Length: 257
Image 1: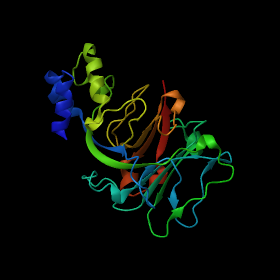
Image 2: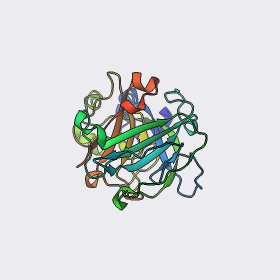
Image 3: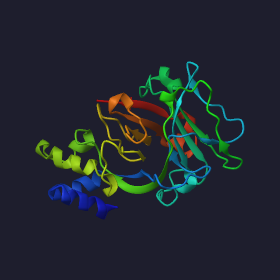
Image 4: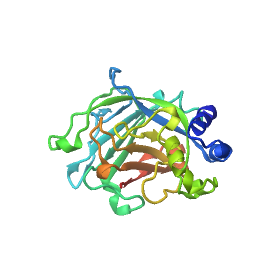
Protein backbone atom coordinates (compact mmCIF):
# COMPACT_ATOMS: atom_id res chain seq x y z
CA UNK A 1 0.00 0.00 0.00
CA UNK A 2 2.80 2.41 0.82
CA UNK A 3 4.36 1.87 -2.59
CA UNK A 4 1.02 2.69 -4.21
CA UNK A 5 0.66 5.87 -2.16
CA UNK A 6 4.21 6.98 -2.91
CA UNK A 7 3.53 6.49 -6.62
CA UNK A 8 0.50 8.78 -6.38
CA UNK A 9 2.55 11.32 -4.44
CA UNK A 10 5.22 11.32 -7.13
CA UNK A 11 2.66 11.60 -9.93
CA UNK A 12 1.37 14.74 -8.24
CA UNK A 13 4.88 16.27 -7.84
CA UNK A 14 4.91 16.07 -4.04
CA UNK A 15 8.06 13.93 -3.68
CA UNK A 16 9.61 16.37 -1.19
CA UNK A 17 6.73 15.73 1.20
CA UNK A 18 6.37 11.98 0.62
CA UNK A 19 7.65 10.86 4.03
CA UNK A 20 5.43 13.35 5.86
CA UNK A 21 2.34 12.27 3.91
CA UNK A 22 2.99 8.57 4.44
CA UNK A 23 3.55 9.16 8.17
CA UNK A 24 0.08 10.71 8.49
CA UNK A 25 -1.70 8.06 6.39
CA UNK A 26 -4.21 5.59 7.83
CA UNK A 27 -5.30 2.20 6.45
CA UNK A 28 -8.75 2.28 4.87
CA UNK A 29 -10.95 -0.06 2.85
CA UNK A 30 -12.43 1.29 -0.36
CA UNK A 31 -15.80 0.08 -1.64
CA UNK A 32 -15.31 -0.77 -5.30
CA UNK A 33 -18.41 -0.98 -7.45
CA UNK A 34 -18.67 -4.19 -9.48
CA UNK A 35 -21.68 -3.42 -11.64
CA UNK A 36 -21.46 -6.53 -13.80
CA UNK A 37 -21.18 -8.99 -10.92
CA UNK A 38 -24.36 -10.99 -10.30
CA UNK A 39 -25.83 -10.44 -6.87
CA UNK A 40 -26.24 -13.35 -4.49
CA UNK A 41 -28.09 -13.40 -1.19
CA UNK A 42 -26.11 -11.70 1.55
CA UNK A 43 -23.52 -10.13 -0.75
CA UNK A 44 -22.20 -6.63 -0.16
CA UNK A 45 -23.94 -3.90 -2.08
CA UNK A 46 -24.80 -0.23 -2.24
CA UNK A 47 -28.49 0.59 -2.51
CA UNK A 48 -31.14 -1.93 -3.48
CA UNK A 49 -32.94 -3.91 -0.79
CA UNK A 50 -31.23 -5.67 2.14
CA UNK A 51 -31.10 -9.42 2.62
CA UNK A 52 -32.49 -9.96 6.10
CA UNK A 53 -33.26 -12.61 8.69
CA UNK A 54 -36.79 -13.43 9.86
CA UNK A 55 -38.23 -10.75 12.14
CA UNK A 56 -36.44 -7.84 10.52
CA UNK A 57 -38.23 -4.50 10.94
CA UNK A 58 -37.51 -1.73 8.43
CA UNK A 59 -36.37 1.38 10.40
CA UNK A 60 -38.26 4.67 10.06
CA UNK A 61 -38.02 8.31 11.06
CA UNK A 62 -41.28 10.03 11.99
CA UNK A 63 -43.12 7.05 10.47
CA UNK A 64 -41.29 7.61 7.15
CA UNK A 65 -39.21 4.52 6.17
CA UNK A 66 -35.52 5.32 5.94
CA UNK A 67 -33.53 4.88 2.75
CA UNK A 68 -31.43 1.72 2.59
CA UNK A 69 -27.88 2.83 1.79
CA UNK A 70 -25.58 -0.19 2.01
CA UNK A 71 -25.16 -3.80 3.03
CA UNK A 72 -21.69 -4.96 4.11
CA UNK A 73 -20.92 -8.67 4.38
CA UNK A 74 -18.00 -8.93 6.80
CA UNK A 75 -16.92 -12.33 5.46
CA UNK A 76 -16.16 -10.59 2.14
CA UNK A 77 -13.92 -8.08 3.94
CA UNK A 78 -11.34 -10.51 5.27
CA UNK A 79 -8.78 -10.02 2.51
CA UNK A 80 -8.94 -6.22 2.80
CA UNK A 81 -9.36 -6.14 6.59
CA UNK A 82 -5.88 -7.47 7.36
CA UNK A 83 -5.88 -5.79 10.78
CA UNK A 84 -9.05 -7.73 11.68
CA UNK A 85 -10.91 -4.62 12.76
CA UNK A 86 -14.32 -6.03 11.85
CA UNK A 87 -16.03 -9.28 12.87
CA UNK A 88 -15.34 -12.32 10.69
CA UNK A 89 -18.98 -12.83 9.80
CA UNK A 90 -22.32 -11.06 9.81
CA UNK A 91 -24.00 -8.29 7.86
CA UNK A 92 -24.02 -4.56 8.49
CA UNK A 93 -26.96 -2.49 7.24
CA UNK A 94 -26.77 1.28 6.82
CA UNK A 95 -29.98 3.34 6.65
CA UNK A 96 -30.45 7.10 6.56
CA UNK A 97 -33.02 9.78 5.86
CA UNK A 98 -32.32 11.49 2.54
CA UNK A 99 -34.43 14.57 3.30
CA UNK A 100 -33.62 15.36 6.94
CA UNK A 101 -29.96 14.49 7.30
CA UNK A 102 -28.44 13.73 10.69
CA UNK A 103 -25.90 16.01 12.31
CA UNK A 104 -22.92 14.35 13.92
CA UNK A 105 -23.09 14.32 17.74
CA UNK A 106 -26.65 15.66 17.85
CA UNK A 107 -28.59 13.21 20.08
CA UNK A 108 -31.86 14.56 18.66
CA UNK A 109 -30.94 13.05 15.28
CA UNK A 110 -30.66 9.43 16.41
CA UNK A 111 -33.76 8.37 14.51
CA UNK A 112 -32.62 9.93 11.22
CA UNK A 113 -30.26 7.02 10.58
CA UNK A 114 -29.80 3.43 11.67
CA UNK A 115 -26.85 1.05 11.78
CA UNK A 116 -27.92 -2.57 12.24
CA UNK A 117 -25.67 -5.59 12.76
CA UNK A 118 -27.02 -9.02 11.80
CA UNK A 119 -24.62 -11.65 13.23
CA UNK A 120 -26.27 -14.72 11.68
CA UNK A 121 -26.26 -15.09 7.92
CA UNK A 122 -28.46 -18.17 7.67
CA UNK A 123 -32.08 -18.06 6.51
CA UNK A 124 -31.67 -14.72 4.77
CA UNK A 125 -34.21 -13.49 2.26
CA UNK A 126 -34.75 -10.26 0.36
CA UNK A 127 -36.59 -7.76 2.55
CA UNK A 128 -40.04 -6.65 1.50
CA UNK A 129 -39.90 -2.84 1.40
CA UNK A 130 -42.64 -1.03 3.34
CA UNK A 131 -45.61 -0.06 1.21
CA UNK A 132 -45.06 3.59 2.13
CA UNK A 133 -41.37 3.63 1.17
CA UNK A 134 -41.16 6.57 -1.21
CA UNK A 135 -39.29 6.35 -4.53
CA UNK A 136 -36.89 9.06 -3.43
CA UNK A 137 -35.71 6.63 -0.73
CA UNK A 138 -34.95 3.77 -3.13
CA UNK A 139 -31.57 3.46 -4.88
CA UNK A 140 -30.49 0.97 -7.54
CA UNK A 141 -28.56 -2.04 -6.26
CA UNK A 142 -24.85 -2.07 -7.12
CA UNK A 143 -22.63 -4.98 -5.96
CA UNK A 144 -19.37 -3.95 -4.33
CA UNK A 145 -16.00 -5.44 -3.56
CA UNK A 146 -13.31 -4.12 -1.25
CA UNK A 147 -9.81 -2.76 -1.71
CA UNK A 148 -7.33 -1.84 1.01
CA UNK A 149 -5.45 1.45 0.62
CA UNK A 150 -3.75 4.18 2.65
CA UNK A 151 -5.98 7.21 3.17
CA UNK A 152 -4.57 10.67 3.83
CA UNK A 153 -5.99 13.54 5.93
CA UNK A 154 -7.75 16.61 4.61
CA UNK A 155 -5.20 19.22 3.53
CA UNK A 156 -6.51 21.88 5.93
CA UNK A 157 -7.04 19.58 8.93
CA UNK A 158 -4.68 19.59 11.91
CA UNK A 159 -3.03 16.41 10.62
CA UNK A 160 -2.77 17.92 7.16
CA UNK A 161 -1.13 21.08 8.43
CA UNK A 162 1.31 18.99 10.47
CA UNK A 163 2.81 17.71 7.21
CA UNK A 164 4.25 21.17 6.50
CA UNK A 165 3.05 21.38 2.91
CA UNK A 166 2.56 24.96 1.72
CA UNK A 167 -0.89 26.08 0.57
CA UNK A 168 0.50 26.54 -2.96
CA UNK A 169 0.58 22.73 -3.20
CA UNK A 170 -3.10 22.19 -2.31
CA UNK A 171 -4.15 21.37 -5.89
CA UNK A 172 -1.46 18.71 -6.23
CA UNK A 173 -2.46 17.25 -2.87
CA UNK A 174 -6.07 17.07 -4.09
CA UNK A 175 -4.84 14.84 -6.90
CA UNK A 176 -3.96 12.20 -4.32
CA UNK A 177 -7.26 12.60 -2.46
CA UNK A 178 -9.17 12.15 -5.72
CA UNK A 179 -7.44 8.87 -6.49
CA UNK A 180 -7.73 6.85 -3.25
CA UNK A 181 -5.84 3.61 -3.49
CA UNK A 182 -4.84 4.42 -7.03
CA UNK A 183 -8.45 4.28 -8.25
CA UNK A 184 -9.49 7.45 -10.06
CA UNK A 185 -12.63 8.88 -8.49
CA UNK A 186 -14.90 11.24 -10.42
CA UNK A 187 -18.00 13.06 -9.24
CA UNK A 188 -20.13 10.23 -10.64
CA UNK A 189 -18.45 7.35 -8.84
CA UNK A 190 -18.04 8.61 -5.29
CA UNK A 191 -15.50 8.03 -2.57
CA UNK A 192 -17.07 5.21 -0.58
CA UNK A 193 -14.92 3.68 2.13
CA UNK A 194 -14.63 2.02 5.53
CA UNK A 195 -12.14 3.23 8.16
CA UNK A 196 -9.27 5.65 7.55
CA UNK A 197 -9.37 9.43 7.20
CA UNK A 198 -12.72 10.94 6.17
CA UNK A 199 -12.95 13.08 3.05
CA UNK A 200 -14.19 16.12 4.96
CA UNK A 201 -16.09 18.82 3.07
CA UNK A 202 -16.69 21.47 5.70
CA UNK A 203 -15.13 21.60 9.15
CA UNK A 204 -12.54 19.08 10.23
CA UNK A 205 -13.96 15.77 11.42
CA UNK A 206 -12.01 14.40 14.35
CA UNK A 207 -10.48 10.95 14.06
CA UNK A 208 -8.80 9.59 17.15
CA UNK A 209 -9.50 9.79 20.86
CA UNK A 210 -11.21 6.44 20.49
CA UNK A 211 -13.44 7.41 17.56
CA UNK A 212 -13.18 5.78 14.12
CA UNK A 213 -14.72 6.38 10.74
CA UNK A 214 -17.00 3.37 10.32
CA UNK A 215 -18.22 4.16 6.80
CA UNK A 216 -18.30 7.00 4.31
CA UNK A 217 -20.94 7.10 1.55
CA UNK A 218 -20.37 9.82 -0.99
CA UNK A 219 -22.69 11.53 -3.45
CA UNK A 220 -22.91 9.09 -6.36
CA UNK A 221 -24.49 9.56 -9.78
CA UNK A 222 -24.75 5.81 -10.36
CA UNK A 223 -26.86 5.44 -7.25
CA UNK A 224 -28.76 8.68 -7.61
CA UNK A 225 -27.59 9.67 -4.14
CA UNK A 226 -26.87 13.36 -3.53
CA UNK A 227 -26.35 14.33 0.07
CA UNK A 228 -27.20 18.01 -0.09
CA UNK A 229 -26.30 18.21 -3.77
CA UNK A 230 -22.71 17.03 -3.54
CA UNK A 231 -22.13 16.06 0.05
CA UNK A 232 -21.08 12.96 1.97
CA UNK A 233 -22.66 10.79 4.65
CA UNK A 234 -20.36 9.66 7.46
CA UNK A 235 -20.87 6.98 10.09
CA UNK A 236 -18.68 6.99 13.21
CA UNK A 237 -18.12 4.48 15.99
CA UNK A 238 -15.90 4.24 19.06
CA UNK A 239 -13.13 1.66 19.16
CA UNK A 240 -14.76 0.14 22.22
CA UNK A 241 -18.15 -0.25 20.53
CA UNK A 242 -16.55 -1.65 17.39
CA UNK A 243 -14.64 -4.31 19.32
CA UNK A 244 -17.84 -5.29 21.12
CA UNK A 245 -19.87 -5.25 17.86
CA UNK A 246 -22.16 -2.59 19.31
CA UNK A 247 -22.81 -1.10 15.88
CA UNK A 248 -26.14 0.32 17.04
CA UNK A 249 -24.17 2.91 19.03
CA UNK A 250 -22.66 4.39 15.86
CA UNK A 251 -23.29 8.05 15.05
CA UNK A 252 -23.91 9.63 11.63
CA UNK A 253 -23.71 13.02 10.01
CA UNK A 254 -23.80 14.69 6.61
CA UNK A 255 -21.53 17.41 5.28
CA UNK A 256 -22.25 19.20 2.04
CA UNK A 257 -20.95 22.15 0.03
